[in-house]
Image: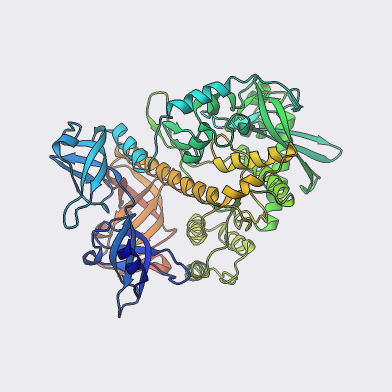
Length: 633
């Protein structure tokens, strides 16, 4: 301990987290971002046994701008990792991490070529780390083993502890009774989700009377079953969110609740928290009310069917005659809401996400990207409810986990302006004080340009990541002054937190105890969300590589979606992205301009948004990357 104090007090020392690189060097992200604006570069010779994710004490190297030397590792960041076992040695999938020696007695009788989950047990001062195998995932290269490896690499698990399952089973048996709840079982309430959705936590209703819309958003009352600091609650907090993969879900709550008692299944009575909002004909919210309720969903509607009703599909309209008028009214209100959000400055990015699923024959399907009116209806209604609830809690001065999205940093805003200038776009905004309407204006300028989706991507990179916080800082992307998450308590812990606060207020109790945990809960839930996003993207990449492996040699239309010093990334209509390596581009030398997203050759250049005809050349399963080439043009 004395040595640690001495190190921390030494001149020019600082603490931070190592971000490794597969080439052997690393960077340190300093803890004190006020004093140190930028990360520090650490050459391989100055790592001192530190690896990616480790917490370290380092010193700034004199005579350099941003080079550091690691003095000591204060805490190991990643002790459990996945990779391949080969003859007593373990080779991590993440090449930023070290090889590990596995003594024979600690190998679980793994065979060479097995994909395994390893715990590092020792870090010798001058030698290779040692460890033990804690789980054999399957044969390296096997699809299921590779997917499970990604799940383990992110610290995720499929199974719940027995005591949590027992508690979930017990509370799920509670009989639905009215007690002091509002009886909404005769109201026309229905759900709209994907065809394969099982955890249904939101239902909607709409009435149009005297020129006003009465919108009801009815959310599963998960807090009725998951009591604060119960075993169920502790497990839900540890998970933070459900994680969705094409072939499975790692739910935040056991199935007895997520697919059972809390899911708003068609024709079944359910406890709910209902948020009613009255809007005038121009979409202005006149008032709102939140109440405990009992509901009974009339129909489990799918996005395609609701979109079909909006398009006057006779067959689908005949199948759901009782919903046609309401759905048409919902479409009308949605369009009014969208118009108002645009007027307020909402930043609507053209960023596409793949919809990957497994068909009845077990084949991977990745259709071209499509977003219909039904998805937009649900999106607008959920945003409206989230805003109404956040404002309710703010006015009550109650604890809340706000969903905040801060303005872009001046540095990133300036880089975006430079990029746009090179495209011939005049971005009239102050990088020191960017407003949502500034970004909206830019998107409007490029809406009819072939590079519009690329501008959206670059703009997204310039923005900060949305997160949960106990203090309200507004939501830049939505141009909303006050926003939280209320509508998905089955799959997001912050929504469950918000529900508990609301219910205390409705019952006349003080929710002040939640102030004590709001700050840490916001940080922890934001971290869990980031991990879940990374895991979902990694598994999606695995599916995309397997999908494209069967299409090697085929030719597609692509759009340049990324430009680097090692090649050009292209995106297909189904959102699959692949790399054209620098060495096979049709020129002999290129110069990379990072700030312009430009790769300039003697005879040909590549920049974001360029249209290319590409050929699928190969699939790199090690890096989970599809490899393209430029087809003969």
